[in-house]
Length: 499
Image (cartoon, rainbow, N blue to C red; front, side, top):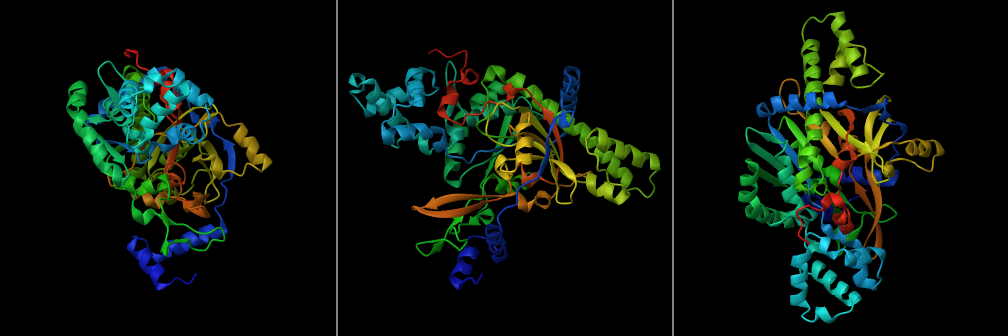
């Protein structure tokens, strides 16, 4: 494409290279290829089930090592809560007293912010007690979402109160900190990194200032919290449906490219072990220790796998290596990594093992939307384990659809990552991305349809070339809040509630 000087200046000012945008346009034109899944990863075929005695051993092993490690919990927290309240916005627009609104109205007192919201609603609507049920519900929801009320619709999800206790309510952000104190702590220091939107940074910092003394006293940990933003140079251009550059008031439109862009942020984190978990997947305090056990199990598994890999790499880089050691390495790849296509040569084995490692918790499938663990053909034509989104699979192909239907597990985003090599050096994580695992989606700007490009997802194509191990974890470790109704579930109701 012939770019105008104006286009070139806009691209440069946004922090992108012209070659990047040219490549994006090629991807728009060619479309993103589907991922060919060979089979669903299941028990005995790619997913490990850890016996209870082994769980105790792995957790204890991690506990024995963690004070010698730099540990960080990495939490993507950029998302606004707008989608969480989608049904509530629809009610304000249409007056449709849907089942969702009926449940909110009936169980209002179970919401963690109920008392604060009701007080605010009475200020905004002094006659609210004389309203009909529908009018009262509408007034409360308007107070919840509007800037003149609590303004929750524009807050990041991490700053929405998720749980109510006897003396305080806790946001998702606070619960992530409390949870981290159970496993992501080394020598009394608990380190977390949140990716946030730039316009929300001050709100997160203020929330931490408010709760820091209380949670440090409560947990006995010192918290170190850092933040980063999705980098502008990872944005992608918007195009018309015919793949020509889209302009709004004479300006190219650049869009955030999804959570796959966060591989850049993750790459900037310098740690021995990184836990990754979504901001909205938290539990009430009295069940954290039960859930945290499995974090330690995953971390213990990572350390044991990593130690074997590092030992093998030291052998492989020595001047002399016996055939017996090569056989041991191949046996490890077959039995521990569940891979049958084992590299044959010393050099190929070294290249195969010298990669980042991730242990991925997987829960049994309950029909929740999202990705799952599959066997796929990688870029070298070799079977590998990947977390694949349904949108990446051609479900119009009967054979692919059959494989999807046989899937038994779901990805809850529960990862423990080893991002340093056997020499203690940080891997450059951007080298292990599959650029063809992105997404094309249809959006609109001011009513005009456009196409948008998202980069390979953080735990999907952005980690495609990592050593990957799937481990089953219990369903109770997965408690996301996708809609406001999820806050009414038992897993988010504190027994200390006084409602």
